[in-house]
Image (cartoon, rainbow, N blue to C red; front, side):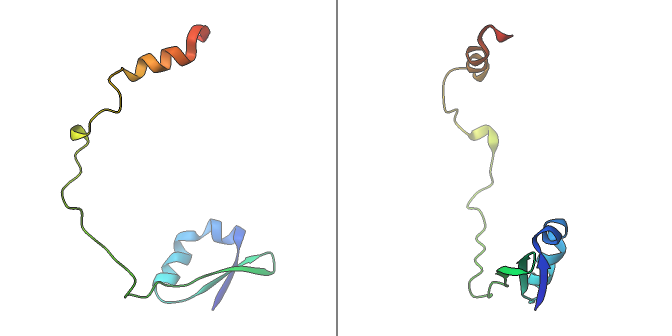
Length: 80
């Protein structure tokens, strides 16, 4: 098992996640105190489901009928 400090983990997160994907566990240390263990997820638990249909932004309905710029103008008031 590989051990790494929080500061080092933040700097090398992608590399550490590659280790975990490869099957290795990583112990996370707060200075010298173990605080967490990153372990691979068993294949049986991994669930990947394709989208039912492609995402198309233009098909989304607006949440409000008011122009968002009007909200921004109201919020800024006389400051601008």
